[in-house]
Amino acid sequence: MSEESDSRTHNLVVPKTSKGDVGHAIAKGVIGSVPVLGSAGAELFSFVVSAPIEKRRNEWMEQVGERLRTLESDRGLSLEELQQDEEFIDMLIQASTIALRTSQQEKREALLNAISNSTSSTSIQSAIKQMYLRLIDDFNEWHIRLLKLFSNPPQWFSEHGVKPPQNITMGSLELVLKAAYPELITKRAFYDQVWRDLNVAGLVSTDSLQGGMSGQGMMQLRASERGKEFLWFIQSQS
Image (cartoon, rainbow, N blue to C red; front, side):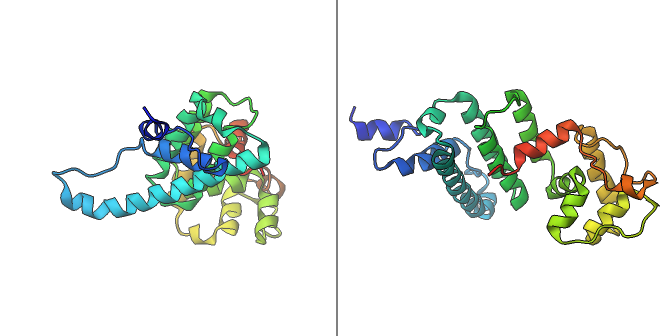
């Protein structure tokens, strides 16, 4: 069998064109394993979703390819070695499948960061990484926003140029949330459910946003150790 034919047979074979194409080749091979929606018996469904799905696939493939090339240039990682790393390929396939199911950019960015950080020297076990990917899949962008806010409220307010609650001697975490995101003021049922989800997942150390506390206590971090680890995993480390 010729070298060209062999490259067509194995999706993940590194092309010979240039080293810069390797990241794209890995992403293309992995994403090619994700099934395309649609069937002969569901032509209308296929008509509605095929183009958007293909657009997401192409965008994601380019983003992953760029991220892999960055890992190669900035961290000195060998993409050829990553190609043979079964644990990394497992992560890439799982993250890619999740990415195709969402249009939320914060979730897609979290998935890209998870791919990058799964190549770092870390004590996070493979099973826990996979669990964190499932959490990204289950969560929406507000879960990520609230966790980031309460992982370090003073830093969040400073970085976003937003004023924290002023002249409060007693209050609750709810006041912090409303100061950060006034669009949620009338959506208590929604943000209470988001907080319960974070609490059930073990990512925050307080079970309610409504408990009374001092003004100083309101601004203390509420992310658990697992919550901080999860945030590290889904945030850029560059």
